[in-house]
Image (cartoon, rainbow, N blue to C red; front, side, top):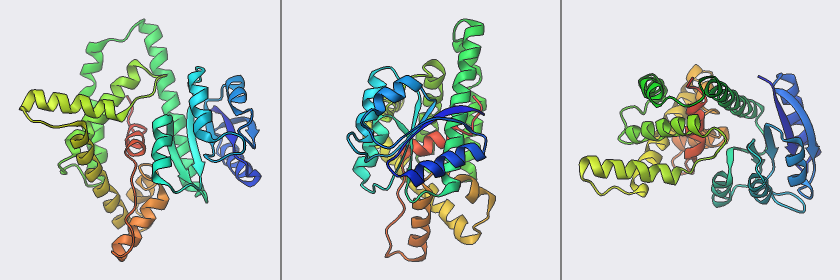
Length: 291
């Protein structure tokens, strides 16, 4: 696993720590470090790194603007945002604009390492898909369909591990993940919008069952299911912080900070609950599936 990285943060200590994390774990090569957003778009386009680690609030130009402008110019790499921003609306906007994962400062090294590895694995999978596509000179839809059951078995295994396979929204969640995997196979360089996928599932449900489900209905069922997942993982952590499922899933599917907040809530309901992000959860599941 070897990719190129560009680190964009105005804190030199953060840049040094991230670079050390990448090099020490043989994750790839850091091609550039930037301390402001002034020339960031030009630098990203020039170096074409596989992964950009980017802060949200930067001198001259913020991270969201940089992401939008680089994507508009054809950059197809991956963005991981690392910031101390707590505003949920700003974080959600960052996901909508193209980031794969958001890591809160102060940085937890284990969480950062998990996330960078996941994104690196996604890149390797995309490369493998492209290589196979070139060999076969085209995507074979029948073959894709034949592999669906194996993919779904893998998804079900993960949802069983975290105790949500029997939740009402698990079927919607499986459908979303399955559609995203097929989309990634066909369009490995393009991003997807969860709202579009919710709408597809709602239309399919209405056609099959004669219901009046909306994209919002699908999203709410999935959100409730993932909230149950973070509750289950947090409970595992309270029972045994070194439980293998806790160490595996707490930072793979959620922000570790939010899992710890959920643990506080379980111990004291006066505390706020931990927050979840659907896209992060979905990408975390996909990173564990060999498709």
